[in-house]
Image 1: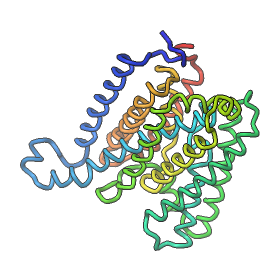
Image 2: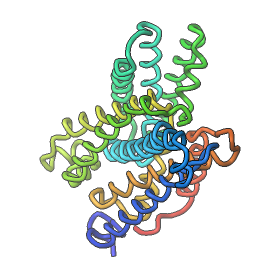
Image 3: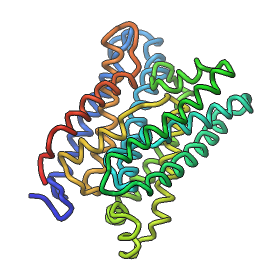
Image 4: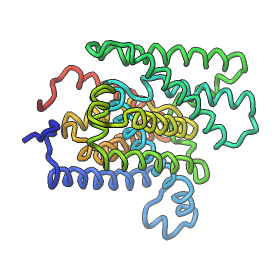
Length: 335
């Protein structure tokens, strides 16, 4: 029976069961990810060969953790952005946030190539924040009766930013770098190169924790500025905090592994179809589902053309596009 927010799974035992099931599947997928590769890392090999244990610690475990952190943070960022923009069809990839972050990263690379990676990430985050604010200003001018125009405007806006980034990269002979940033993949993730994702995980965790504690306020924020202010919510502060964290998370992910399409778009919609719109119940499931689906795509990318790899962003792009079309054409299971 649905609750007042339209949730098909009420708070309590059912929601806790869904969370436990997601976590169990995530642990199994993580173990599978650590076991897959050209070299053997079976328990017997770990006991007999010190190099196998070194491979596990330097490459397999960092890569698996990077995939989990990326999937969880992008899914949480997507669901928060959808609530704040009041549209189910938006995520950092459909609002120009990713393209703006790439422009900032490209500018930092051209103007100050000696900057450390953290400084370049901050430049990308500032650019992503500015790009997101421009998109929000554009979205406010779109009639609420036409929700499909919001992602359409975002895609056009993102395409303009991407074209500008491509032109600058072509002039500076940096097209190869730009292509690397646009393709989300984890083959280069090693110990010492993924630690920025811990910061992304912390930021998304803070956002998720706040959203969990004040889920009702985020739900009210999803009603729009006028309704939110009428109900006593500090809409501007809530919107500003959400936009800043989403921009930082997007910049961290792009700097570390590249652009990953559809994660923040498909996962919240998929979970919402099953659990409804009760943010307090669904948020942990959104994070776990994002991590699990991206982990599945990364494992498939390693298995389909072994010993070569297909980028996880490519696999998830195909899977996410097909799944999103199915969700658009099918009616929700409840409501």
